[in-house]
Image 1 (cartoon, rainbow, N blue to C red):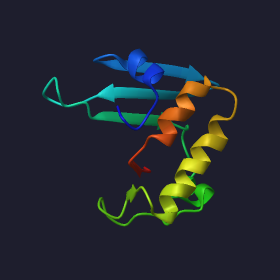
Image 2 (cartoon, one colour):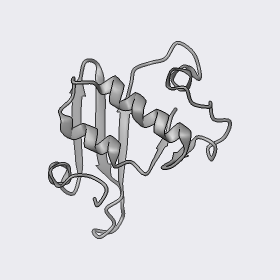
Image 3 (cartoon, helix red, strand yellow):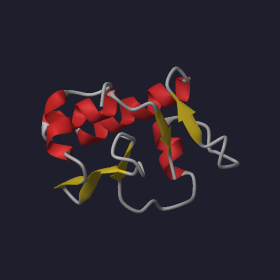
Image 4 (cartoon, rainbow, N blue to C red):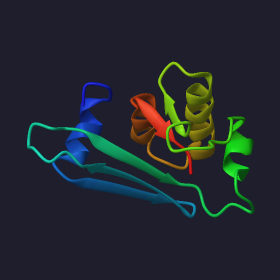
Length: 111
């Protein structure tokens, strides 16, 4: 909650919020087991890819070879590339509030 804007946190509430645009969808969903646990998952569906690794190639990031290597963390070059790609792909098709969710990410996994 501290890494994004209060308006987005208000929309999320204590559950799930979804946005759909031009065939894509974005979901924010709380997953903490305790009321005080405010961890939230962010899902961005960019459609089906023609081949494995196509989305990583488009982003300019290294294709993962394991679950651990697929986790991009804030400060990593590939993390920045993934964030930039998300912002560019979303463009002006989504409410600007959703871009604050991208800015607030701590880690990204591309699959």
